[in-house]
Length: 157
Image 1: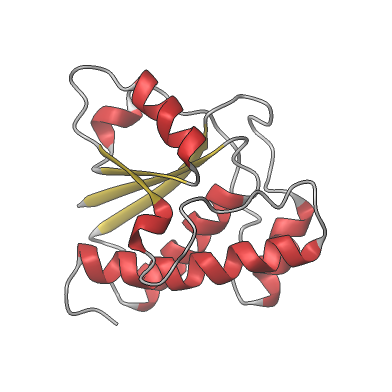
Image 2: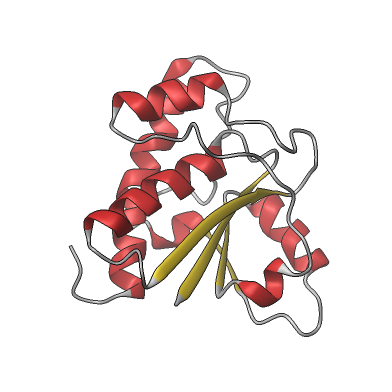
């Protein structure tokens, strides 16, 4: 079992989008029994809350159901439980590196490290913008998730 955790600030926009898109692609590839996904926050602002309604609506329009997801904060146990922890931006990555316990097994990377043509390192935060920001996050998540799966399980489409 390969375990992947997606992380952003509040776990209500970027990381649940990445989780939901990646989970959908994993299920479509018939690999749900081999890959576990989750998402979490670097900060506890929204613990227990569903994704932002704009996140849910944008994802639903593309066939991704994020409504069951609930925000949670990263724990030190996550660094031992997950194989790969993917930060949505460089600030999250720095925070995760600071929180990482000495006995961590998880590899820490930026999510967009797996996007083949991204000129960005950070997934832009759509929270304070209009709906186009949520669409852009989905565009990045869909492309990156496909390449992430190919990296984890070579030969998948």
